[in-house]
Image (tube, rainbow, N blue to C red; front, side, top):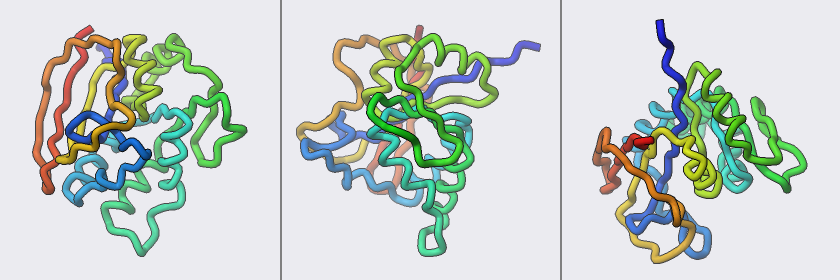
Length: 189
């Protein structure tokens, strides 16, 4: 029986004009409504390993200690999902990582990621637009999942890199409370 290879997913929360943060680095406009948060929890539950750049890791490590009684059920659920997954952080500047199930890699090596995908039993995700750009350029990303928020921020960090051309096939769309629209695409290699 042929076992399918795990996929590498790039998920980005974006403004309608395609930015993951504004010109000042803020992303307070991206806080998910409960229905969206639960949907993301269910997507993330299928991921066995998260690949992060330094900045995304620094944002996401919040979830290492999150999940207390003062947080909502959906937040507690996400904390447990995040804590259960493996994490690989790519950084030349971090001295060490501070979360469980996490290892530090100094450089992004596409062939190493290919071998991780081939050996994985569950999907992998790449988080952060800088690292995702490297993975997209290397032809490693299998699916792009965008969550477009109904806000235009006019500048910041782009969710998708310049100078990368992709042929995409729309797999799914969904609308959430607050006007967020999700589009899931397969990268046609």
